[in-house]
Length: 316
Image (cartoon, rainbow, N blue to C red; front, top):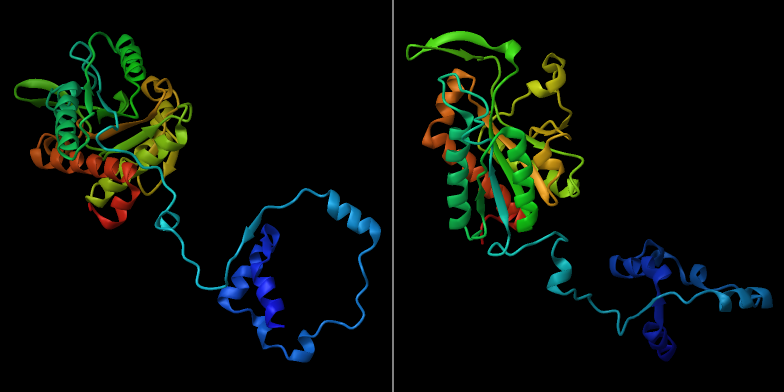
């Protein structure tokens, strides 16, 4: 009997019987039955010839041979979570500075162009990423009018075969929300009604799933720093500027028509770092402290994107 049991241990176990292995390891509830219950019936009929023929004709299933029923030893690789990883030194990150010197984007409540805010923040993000080992990070600066510059950005990103594309912007509001005021002896416009950051992705991006994951990491890190996202984009009052909210926790919206998001051939996201048309938030966005918070959030998001374990354990 001992010999027979040993022979059974060494027999192949088919994939369809894999569930039995868990019963062996955990301890099957059926083990409590009496020997009488476990004894096979006295009269066992042999399989019919037709059944044997069908079994022989069926394709063989993959078999896993077990040498013994001792503890299972899994390799370290099998214990690691399945996740995309990358080499920071080789990850090509493109930081797109929104707008151009000729087409400056929004004008802040204190008459400063959005392009100035974008360039200042993008440079700080670049410096921090390179300091963390992401040495292939590049700033993308283009010239010319708005629409033409957009296609230049896309062409450059695709030619460089970037792995990640992040467009840096600062927010405003539709004209119907603007109010007049005077600053520094000049007429200006403001809206203190809305504030906060937002992150956008396009469903038309060829790697939408990765784009969304990256955008959510950025939003998560911004939120972890105590920042709130701009909730107005999900409201009907925004009219044609209303966008579907994909994540109510992280402030990620869908904006399918954005050229820099749908035409790039890599994962892409657009960050509106904050509202510069809001007078209080503009002052914060101008401060080194707020730029440090935002740039650190982006760096943390890139680290977690590249090495998911970092987001749980912190830097190793």
